[in-house]
Image (cartoon, rainbow over all chains, first blue to last red; front, side):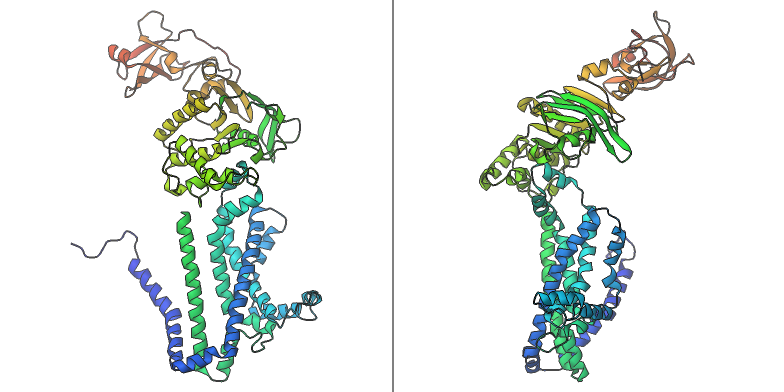
Length: 274
Length: 330
C-alpha cells in the first residue's frame, strides 16, 4: 500500500518548498534576528525602554493615527470605489489611475508636498489655520500623511467586490419598499463588509509601518509628533541597537496581534454569510 | 388588480426593446409573457415593476385605472420574483421573508415578533416550514425560489410579477413548482404575470398567453386559442413542433393521419425514417416521395405503429385532414 497520498494537482512538494524557503529568507529569518537582538537585553531593560514616556507617546501616536487614518480611508475609499464602479463620467479612467499614485510616489516626495500644502503658509494649511487647526507639524499632520498613503488599499480591495455585485438584490430591496439609504445600510454594506475590513486592515498595517512621508510633515517633536519608526531610527543613530530592536519587536507584536484579531473577525463574518 | 398597458415604447440607446406595446391583464388572471430572448418580455415586466422606465411619450401604465408611471417600485403594490432568486445572502430565510415588512415606515411597521410570525406563516404556505433559520446558500434552487416567492408575498402585493421563475431549475423541480404555482394562484387569485421562453410552461400554466417577438406582441389569447389558431407563422412555429408544407401551410405532427401507402385518401407517400417509440407516442420522420416536400414529422399512437408493424424504411401514406389554416401572414 502506498503511504504517500497521490495528488491530482502536480507540484505540491516543489511549490510548498519554494514558498517556505522564500518566506524564511525574506520574512522569518530577519524577524528572528530582530527578536534575538532584542533578547540581548534583560526584562528590566525591556520594561525601562517600553514604559518610558517618550516610547509610550510614540506608541499612542503611531497606533492612534494609523487607526484613524485607516478608518477615514475606509469611508472615503468606499465612496471612491463606489463612484468609480457605479457611474460613467468623463475622466473616470484618469481618476481611477490617480488612485494608484500614492502607491508609486516616493513617500518622501509625498511627505514634502503635504508638509508644504498643509504647512502654516500652504493653501490647505491656511484654510485649516482659519478654523483653528494646525495642519503640518502636528499629530493631525501625521494623520493626513497616513491617510494619503493608505486609502488606495481600501479602494482597490472594495472595487472588484463592487464590480461583481449583481444589481438584483438591490432591485429586490427596492420592490419590497426599501429606500436607497435602507438598501445601502441593510443590503450593500453587509455584503461589502468583509472587503471593507480587509481594506481597513491593509491600510492600517501600511500606516503603522510608514516612515518616509511622516518624517517630513510631523515635525518629529518627542512626546508630541514622534512616531515609533522614527524613535527606532533615533536609537540606531545613537548606536543603541538593542533598544531599537526592543521597540521594533514590541511594535511587531502589537501589530501582529491586532491584524490577527481582525483576520479572525473577518473569517467569522465570511463564514456566517456563506 | 387589473393592469392596462397602453402604447409602451422602450429603447436602450438605439436598440428598441419594446415598440408600441399595448396589453390588458384582467384582475385575478395568470398571464404568461412568452417569447424568445430579446423579444422584450422581461423589459415589459420590469417596467411594470418600476425597475425600468418607458420612453417618454404617450405611454401609460394603469393599475386599476391609476397611472403608476411616477410611483416608485416599492409603492406600486407589486411583488417581484427574480430569475436568480436575488435573496439576501447575509440574512436568514425568515429575515429575507420579513424584509419587506421590516422596512415599512415606523407607523405601519409591525413589531419584530409579528414580522417573524408572518414570515413563518408564509414559509408554511410555500411548504418550507422548519427552514426559517437557514441561510439561502444552504437551500436548493427550488427552495430558494419558493423563499423568493414568500418574500414577495409578504408585503401583500396586488400583483405578482415573476421573471423566468423556473428558468434556473432542474426539469423535475420545475414541473413540480409549476403545478404548485398554478394551484397557489387558484387559491389566492392574485393577478399574476410571468415571463418564460418555454411554450409548454406558458400553455400549461397561464389563462392568457402573450406571445412576443421583436419588441412587439405577436398574438395574445387563451392557451388553446393561441395553439389552435395561431395568427402568424412565428406563433405557429414557436408554440410547438410544426411541419411547414409548400405554399406556407403549417400542420402539427399529431394532426397528420398515418396510413398504408395503398389506402384511400392518401395525400402523400413517403418512407419512415428514424422511428422513435420510447415514450407515450411514436414519433417518426417521413421522407416524402414528392420532391416538393421536406421531411415531415409525424406523431402517432404507439398501438397503431405496432399494428402496422412499421420499421425504418417502410413505405407509408399520409393524410392531411383538412389542409387547414392556409396562408398565414408572416
